[in-house]
Figure 1 (cartoon, rainbow, N blue to C red):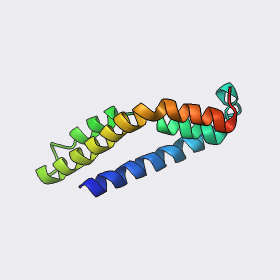
Figure 2: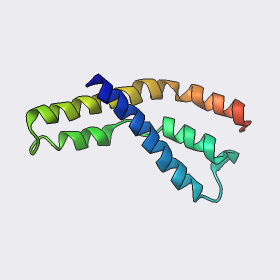
Figure 3: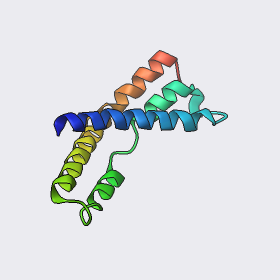
Amino acid sequence: MIIIGLAAILFNIGARFLGVMASTAICKQLPDGYHIKPFSILMTWGGLKGGLCLALAMSTKSFLPVSIYNFILYVTYITIIFTTLIQGLTVGKLYNWIKRKWAIK
């Protein structure tokens, strides 16, 4: 389950990045002089922390077998813990790195 949880984290980050990048590509102007790539990286890393994912996972209890429900819940918690602890605690460092690398105000 840990391997699948880690794969879910990677898939989550990749899908979020593609979604942010696609929606950002249609914007005419980004805030604070950002370019599309650093803006997408920052929005991906600082994104949602899993409340909706947990609600969706918990809503499957009534129609899934207990073993599958527990599996989905476990993988969801792994993803939430990663996004909250790792991404949440490092978003400031990422922001400072982006400011230096792309010379953003």
